[in-house]
Amino acid sequence: MSLTLLAQSALGGMLHGGIYALLALGLSLSWGLLRLVNLSHFALAFLGAYLAYHCGTTFGWPIWLSALVIPPVFFIGGLALHALLVRFQVSEFASMLVTFGVTILIESLIQWIWSADFRTYETPYAQESLRLGPLFVPVLELLAFTCAAVLATAAWLGLNKTSWGKALRAAAHDGAIAAAFGINARRLSYLLAGLCAASAGIAGIFIALTSTLAPSQIEAWIGVVFAVVIIGGLANPVGALLAGMLIGVSEAITMAAVNPAWAPLVAFSILIILLLWKPKWL
Image (cartoon, rainbow, N blue to C red; front, side, top):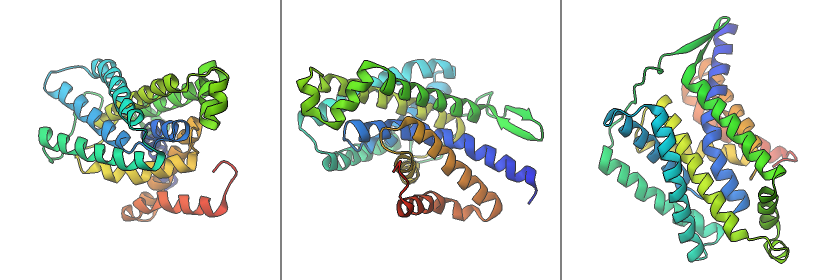
């Protein structure tokens, strides 16, 4: 194998890792700070992908208009779902079961409206790429990676440099003590839940632009993104970005150098090795 092909595979994997990071970001924050394992995050992302596809192919919306509309709608949906979980005082383990049920409902809704057929959202940018020496950089994947990096950095700054971010971390660490100091953890939890759902909508837009859509793919992404969340660390947005890059590059090199059939094993192999090694950030 030539070094150019290997470098091209690594570059493509790193950019694809941006999609993993976008999906992992909301789940990582929800799980780490709200103690809710929101499996419906994946289904929301694919619902966002199908909505972007539908708005573009049926209504002729430019992708920037979908990007302006879908995340705010998902923010409201995230508030509604979180209100349901809070109303019934759903625990961390129970949240996984409840949101898995929501995932099944959303997947069924997608299949009912758009069928189980594979769909591709063709845009003028689909074949666009930038030349970087002997390498080619796909424009859409580069935009997805840039968006992931910006959101991860913004989330890290928000959690570590703002008063509401510090309050969120304090409430997650010890809710009773945080409440004694006047922190309204419930109000902050709604804000975070809405932002996590909005991030799923953003991830969905990029999934629509870069991938072939099918309802059955929801389950296929769950395992990989779970590995990204665990490797990156809960409530660690920058860790999610780095873990997404690690998994993306590892999968791409495996497909190029070994066999594409081995790629699905990569994420969990890396996760098992790191869990056995037990680095400090896990």
